[in-house]
Length: 157
Image: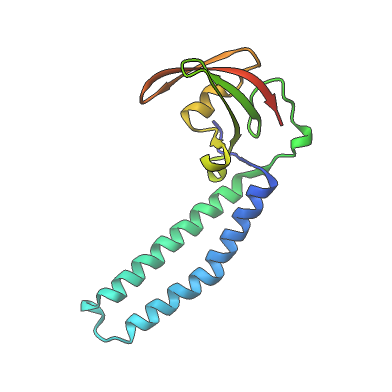
């Protein structure tokens, strides 16, 4: 897969809001925690100071990761997508051939994946296995539990 991250407008807006929050409130809270720890005396033996600095480092790492995602993000317009095969943002109804149960998932970027909302990452084993499949085709997907077969029943946007 390429380095481009395809997002829905909703997913893009969530990332923008999270990044803004981390840069403003997150950085402010980290600076405050460091200042409070610094006031407690000798920095060489100050566990609170070390923890605050480590938290600040993790915050900056998260900000950097989000900025990298945003730099390669492309918002997809669902009205321009075709549903002849499974693609990013497709809502695909599949039949688990072994369990004889139907599931409907939307394939999204990793940052938008949420199993409770039936959104799975295109980078997940099931997501990768379904990409490019057409209605009626069977995807054989290697999972930790063995090979699973999913028949594509319907593709929507």
